[in-house]
Image 1 (cartoon, helix red, strand yellow):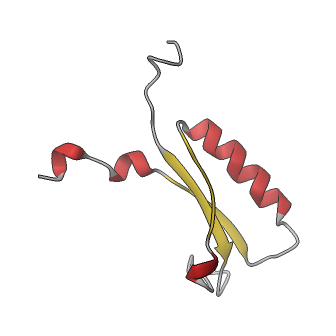
Image 2 (cartoon, helix red, strand yellow):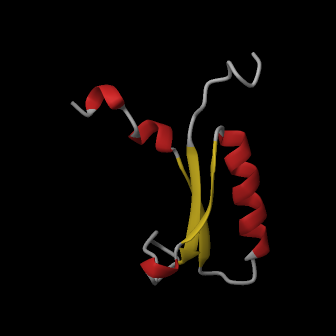
Length: 78
């Protein structure tokens, strides 16, 4: 497959500081970091890994890959 025919599976990478380490509840929603939007899981994982490694000194910082393509279903919006 070429880049034009590869399926685009939208993934978002976000993160921020958690209130507690045992639950994905952000300390301050106004400080959520949007790392980026990516057309494949592999691209998103590279961005997630780079950002997570850059914040390794803060134990409460967490970054997540959101599978946005699973949330967007135009057929189900009717």
